[in-house]
Length: 243
Length: 243
DNA sequence: CGCCGTGTTGACCAGTTTCAAGATTGGTGG
DNA sequence: CCACCAATCTTGAAACTGGTCAACACGGCG
Image 1: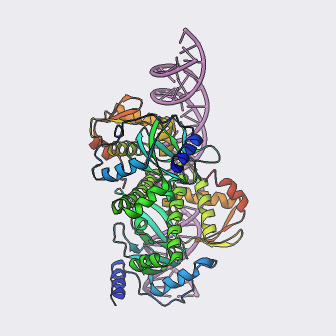
Image 2 (image 1 turned 135 degrees about the vertical axis):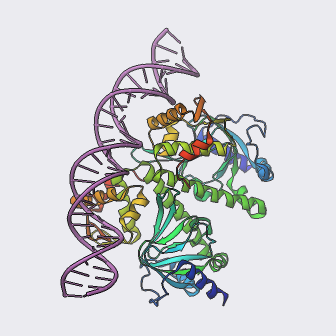
């Protein structure tokens, strides 16, 4: 089984914890609807892996041998600049994929933003499925389009939004992707520093903006890594001309 | 000839100046080497169009019926936000393409950043060539990869670089893409406002940074729309941890 | 010649960062 | 179970970068 061999190679390189058993659907994001068939097909060729916070899933420049689907936790896609500055291009949340298209993902380093469980798929299999299954091909294309869309949003955010707008956009985006509505609790797995590096701010500014939103009763922070949007309408109004 | 008909439709929509005759190679960027065959093949199915500064080539959301190659001048790819803020995702310089992949380009509005001459290719033909000519397929993939690369650079720039670093990066990038070396004159067709909207700065800050670089003898500005990099080494050092 | 669009420069101001304490949280070992 | 420690988060005050507002310069064109 050369496939299994490759997986354990990679696993060794990234030093994830030994893969533990998880119910196959445990952390699958609900509401995926149309994706289920493809997801199941992938599930069969994938392997579950766990990483502790801050472990590297793959590095910039690595050969893109695997794609990943997040089961729980979050991946951060980041770029480390020469002088230590860091920039996070995006997060991969539960139910989402990364590295499906070698084009994009492996230009970044992927790290566990929190304790993380993923399923890894050999890239070759994904490509093969893309060629035979039309629905899978479509999903690959959608994935790329989404990725472009989100990079674009980030460019708008970084280029033309204020600190408060950025934080609000981030929270709205997070809640939407998690399928969480007003007054529901959303997980915010990444650290404040991660958020700051994603929004092009300092950690202190992120904190201040969160506090300010809390004081204004627009959000609540039941725990360090949870948010509740208590007034989506007003948040949207603050979200800036974005988009 | 339905192709010609479609082209003039589009031309009418965008109100370009009547296409004038240009020697086929007049503004072709030299040094394209390997691309020449494909370029020539495209040239045959393309139509020359001219636009005055600020005319729209295509709008965000338009059907991507055409791809474009810039012969002279520059296209700006921009996004207009609700509140009037504007953000320029990038410029297309002479010799470069835009809209080759419907995926990306037509999420932006393309406008003439200066007086502009392009060749327009019916999208269908490009796709057809992509399927039959392997070298063309490769070029299309490269194009996408490049586009992603440049968006990424912009994200780093906007997220983690200072005003001076941004301007320096921009100038270095411009010179490199124009194939211009130290002490050679590079065209900078776009306005200061365009540059500002690309770098996420104000026009005043762009001016100040350019003046500062000029005072430091790192660049010269022989004309409003020309730059000479007089000390690429020091500029690189200023260019920040970029990449 | 004077106007208009664009670019440049200066003075002042606001938002963000930086620097510096604390406060919480989570993990470890007694 | 609690005490302690390290890491992370929060908050405050001062410094600074870049933005805003305003005046002026320059160049093309009617």
